[in-house]
Image (cartoon, one colour):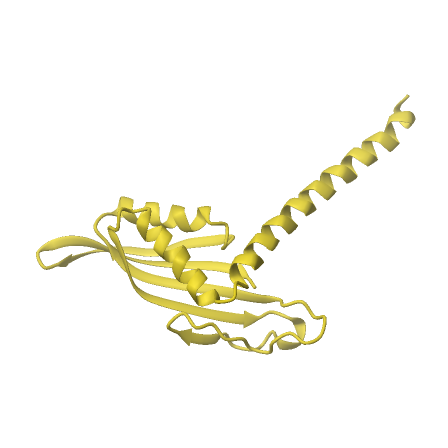
Length: 160
């Protein structure tokens, strides 16, 4: 009896693996579509603006840095191409049918009225599904014009 069920079990396991792979491909496709928009810089700024709007504009992004690092085996020692003003550039662009294997790092520094605003901002960036990994690197309370504010640094990682 157990031998008769084995092919059905293997088929079910294969179906589960294929479903997981399909889900992963859909997420990558959505990320690529967002990042390969005709004007990627505008897309990233739109993503950040949506995050700020989610906080009722109690967050201010003061610094934005985008870097792209080529992760292909022949160029692993290449340093990230560091770019200011949200104008991404590439190190070793893909040629022919080679698929890009670049990691994008978006670093945001800013201030917020309260820590809950930072939390809403981070949640909004995560919900966008553009960056699979979003990390709040630091928060620090500071006094500015006799008012307590929160400084923060956020890093977002994704593949191009």
